[in-house]
Image (cartoon, rainbow over all chains, first blue to last red; front, side):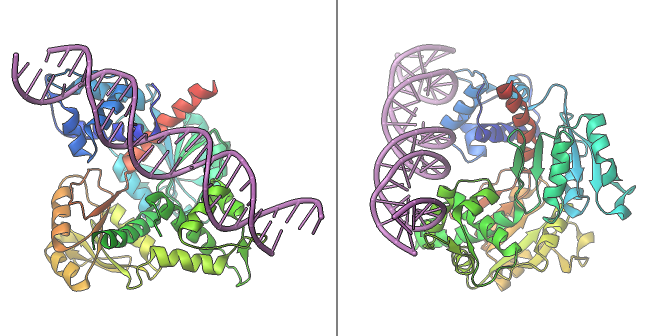
Length: 210
Length: 210
DNA sequence: TAGATTGTTAATCGATTAACAATC
DNA sequence: TAGATTGTTAATCGATTAACAATC
């Protein structure tokens, strides 16, 4: 029941991996097979699955069907998660493309941009709206999550509006830290930092290997 | 000297925050100020700065100029990091937009797409090339890092080519885990998982607060 | 049976936080 | 001085890994 953030991330990956391939009702997977796929350890996989109460078979491993279903019980809100996207630039467009035709558990209920010129434009099947409408849409659709794909400038201001309007979770692509009330969860996706980290770590690897 | 991955991430954020505002040679910052900006603790900031050997002043805090410079000494390769981008879809475009006119420490030396129709097209000032050329460009430019912004299908195949061509670090946006030799560092940026995690955690928060 | 895998506890590892003497 | 901050060690916390009895 008490699954940590890391466990949740890995469960999400397990599910995606298992869903990518078609499997029959009778297919099983071993913990070490899942581990190899995610470059982890079998013990960790078993612990993750223990956290959601999935139980395996000591000779055949875990039945894939029930496993995927049980991950869904943890990850997916049975009433669905409704998401607004702010920022219809390249990144916002990429996210919309990602979402199009994906799981019904996550639904984009509105895309917004501060640029009035973008209002009305249709991106990947989603109509871009003016920021004026965002509070109304969040309320009407009961959106719980926002994706912030704006530049750093003004990100905090948008964030404040989102929180005020009732959003409880934010995926933040803006290269700026957000200050939010404790009840709001912010998941940072920091592309610039990811790049700098890789550039730095491959230098460290060199030192160690030399 | 021995900075962990987490410390490197935070140092990258500190630097960006400090660089965003203009400061004079005489400006100082306290550990608790930096901590508040990143929603961390002052002790953690001091530990991070200790790791790069930066020393503060017991009454005024840390001088910003030398601090930013010292972070650069750790993060930036003095000879620069040359990066190839694979996948010129929405996401690849977003990354190119990000990089345009940024720090000289990271340079995009080539953008590639498997779609021959995209070859020759110019995106954010970068000319998109055919995948046939990628090994040549990596060798000629001595590119150390690749950004993988392709769909999951074929990501592993592209990855293998990159590694074979000499790339030692990969920022992986493709929703697929990559199998690489131990000497290659993969930094995963998983948009789908970030969304699922937020959607899941805001439910958990509810339970705890109730 | 023999062999391989699960479920789970104990041991390890690493990172964060608390605490406080030293400093200005 | 009094008060606030740094530098650093010790304590805590959490997550990962190792280990192994139970199971098939």
